[in-house]
Image 1 (cartoon, rainbow, N blue to C red):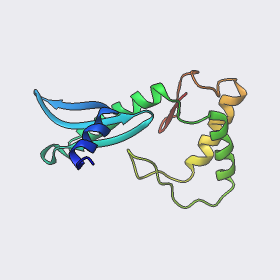
Image 2 (cartoon, rainbow, N blue to C red):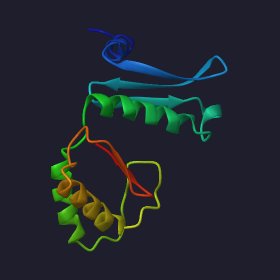
Image 3 (cartoon, rainbow, N blue to C red):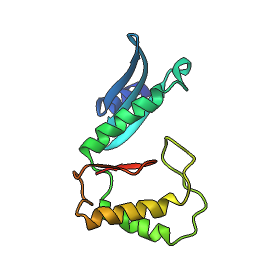
Length: 136
């Protein structure tokens, strides 16, 4: 039987750990196991200053670089179905909570355009649509 400290060390041994550093001081950490972001901590006195957002961006870039998040064709299919619904509010994963429901139709149209041009596949690039972008 092992104590909690051992279990924590074992869990951390299976994760890649990243640090947020400010003037030589580690102010936060984040970790990844496989394709999952497991932990993100920022010291209280450094919170609400953008360090957590930047560390999360780094963690996501690492994960998305190794593991494409979604089949773009399946995502287009989901957008087509969602566009038929009466959506009142969109809850994004992070960054901004002021996402208007009309974006679903604009995203559907953009993905349909990518499909028509043969670019709806991983590795085809980054496509900027003004207030949103997609990295395939």
